Image (cartoon, rainbow, N blue to C red; front, side, top):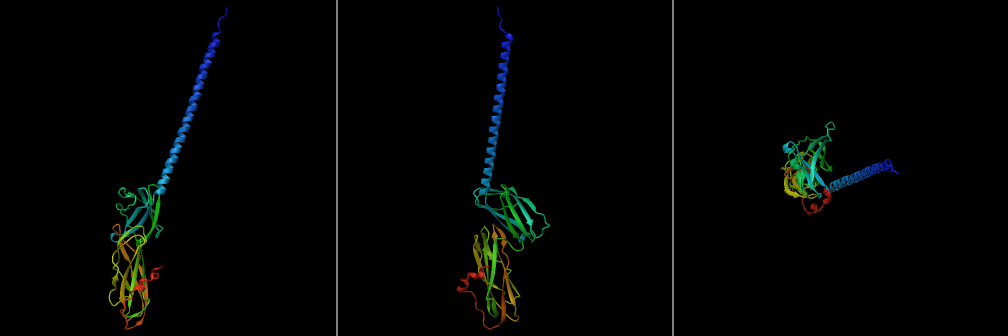
Length: 298
């Protein structure tokens, strides 16, 4: 009579169970590694998508900046930003660097949340609620958006805004006493914004003053200038003896940029006084003069 070998069968059963458990452990480990790999790949794709969306948004973000200051308000700085891109922009910071005085540290200013957002096609003064005051130096001003786009502008407080550019010519250059001198000031909007009510300033200067009467503005009134547009102002002056000298005329213009006054640079020209003549009084303002654009070319 034979008896079954129970010990051997039990060992085989235990081996099968151990093998099954080991297989399950391997399968679980494999699926875990596979899941981790898929999750890592998904996170990488999401990160790449976020970076791509950020770069696209930054490429589509476009804006321009114009600086001006109000001399009647202690040279309070105004920064006009116009959104020329396809997405709304949010301005984060403004950096101001004094180029005249290198000892002055660069200063960073946060933009008030009420002024930070600029919709597509709109413009605004991003410092409306952040009063900043300048001294008569030259500055580099950098405007930085929340996406990191940087627009820089140089601004000379004493030399006027970087928006209105003035040139002057006095005709004739060789004049006699008693003759009339016509002085022309041409003002061009070189910025990216409309400038309203552009007019000649009243502080028109003649040095030395040999005009028979105060120079009379004979042509040119307030004008609204779009970017690249120009306007002209004309004065006349009849010279009186006794001095023979070189006479210099100086003038500038002013306008309104979103309600903020902006001044042009000072423009000058001179005439040489030769001698006295009884002739004169003829106004040198005719179609031939107006058809000579080369007199305004730099």
